[in-house]
Length: 130
Image 1 (cartoon, rainbow, N blue to C red):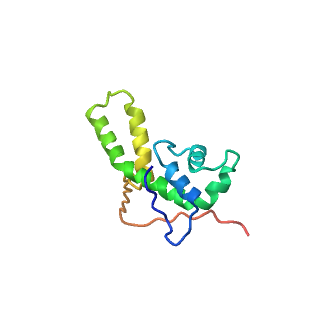
Image 2 (image 1 turned 90 degrees about the horizontal axis):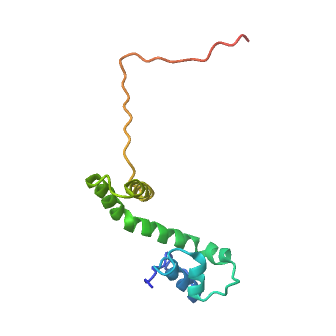
Image 3 (image 1 turned 180 degrees about the vertical axis):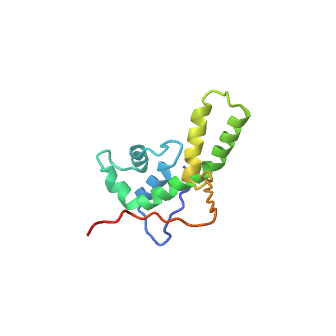
């Protein structure tokens, strides 16, 4: 398992919490909460919410890190489709890559062009008969 860098250095984690956080992002568990709980030594009848709620910040941090680590792979995947657009699953690759890049902050740029041809015009609501 990879060494999990704790989000809050001053916070004290139990051994099970530390093991759970490490297992959750491992290749073995791949984000599966119940598998990570089992790997950390939690009983099978332990409520998953009771384990996840106090660690939600740490879990989100790890998920964001995983997406950031895969952003370059997503960019290369898009480029590969440019080289071979007829490749099997190209549409799915583009969609998955776009989602990862969007979530890591690399979104497509949209430009709005505003032209002013001189005078300004205001559109007012109709007069009411009060």
